[in-house]
Amino acid sequence: MFFTEVKKFPCVENEIIEFLPFIEACKGIVKFVELLGSIFTPVRLDIQGNIDKLSKIHFSDEAGFPTVNSIVEFEVKRAGDQTGIDALLWLKRALEFVHVFLVCFVNDSKQEQHDEDISPFFHKAYEEKLKPYHGWIVQKLFGWIVIAAPSRKSLLHLLASGEDNLTEDVIFGEMEIFLQGLGANIDVINKIYVAHNLVFNQKV
Image (cartoon, rainbow, N blue to C red; front, side):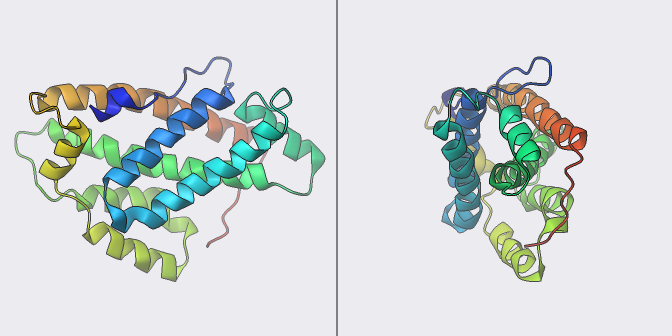
């Protein structure tokens, strides 16, 4: 099953995020987006690109950048190039987008009746977490992407990873465990940016 195969986001203590466990879990988000189909390739490539930028910084000095926090702190003190800060910001927004979508998906599963069309969940997540930072062209592109989103039944089948005996309760149970870690890491990243007064509203 998908959510038992990918790495879960690390537990955070003292608002510190260990880099490697975090980035490995982010790769699971890339795999999730890949499940949604080739139409989501621009989203997947954007997330992977930000993972690559952060990884390049980490592996340039593993002892100096053991945590996500250390990358931000270094670039804040240095002033000038903020590649890591920018990459983490966009990665965080993508994580928030996936988080909102999955929360909507889980909550819908608890209702007596389900709609096979899950595109409204994508729309809600996009409106809240990405649209404010996208220009008109990117917004239109995403509108086309969402139209091709898989159905509820198709996504559950993909998340089951071929295990036909899995119940929906098991799939959603594992999803909720994954979401707890994802949400906790997002909260800490937001706190890091607030602590350093890093607010960016530029559109792309």
